[in-house]
Image 1 (cartoon, rainbow, N blue to C red):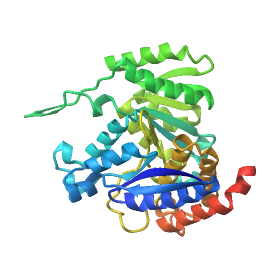
Image 2 (cartoon, rainbow, N blue to C red):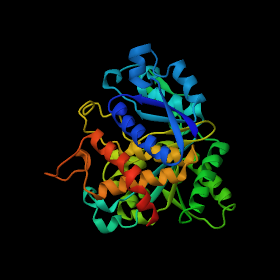
Image 3 (cartoon, rainbow, N blue to C red):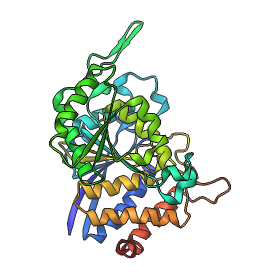
Image 4 (cartoon, one colour):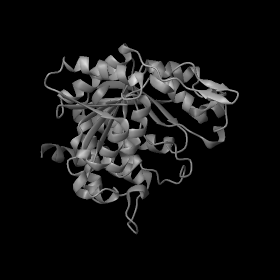
Length: 362
């Protein structure tokens, strides 16, 4: 039996609750493939700061580098909103991504028929929606220098070099070659020199992928088209801040931020996390939706552990459970019965063990 080491960083707020259910489902899925997972828990974010005085402690830094993959819950705590930049939980997230060299963030967005009523968009607009957002993750405004507060001024720097653009562009085109063969590159090349370099680089590399079509969109018009004609898009390639904003916007296609997973890939172990935040207002109430974390686990099985059939089983199980009408509070219609975080996690794990084989044959 193959054993994989997974570094789990539960983080803050609802992070421990959703990662607990992801571990439950991952254990069931790995067993199907004759593998076992060893989960090792480490501190990050506000939880780490309150325990150690650091948001990304050296022990955690060392542990994630030695793991086969990393599962992150969420970071964020209002008590540290006024703290210096290096003491805010978000600094841990940026440091973690940089430490792992995780430059390509994959954020799949799929409209599930069982949840069509939970989107504010008309059901016919959601038919066939299956978008993969490929976001550059370790450059741009979040990392550029100089940055800081200077009296009455504040500065952040948007910067990219060609090598950073090239490597994430290759990820997007390779993904599109295995999907519907369309890359939509999103920039602001009519205004920003950085976007002009981005577009020039993407156009040059597109020639290496003759089977993939390339389209360009300015970020403002794309933001409108993403909700007006979402089924028109396949793979969306964009820079760090644009990708952050657009992938949250895309949550309306799925019906809730709580449903969306992500994978961050690059030089080191893959980093897997739901795209939602720590939601401190509902932490500890047992009502958080763990599906984003569970589907992030499916991406881990596929991209880092090479267990594609197990990943398929998790995705089948999620769809199956949703089709049976189980709902956490965020995706329930008014007056509809809801289940807890643990209840839906347990039911998805059961479906992985008992229902997924039959579903996989259909």
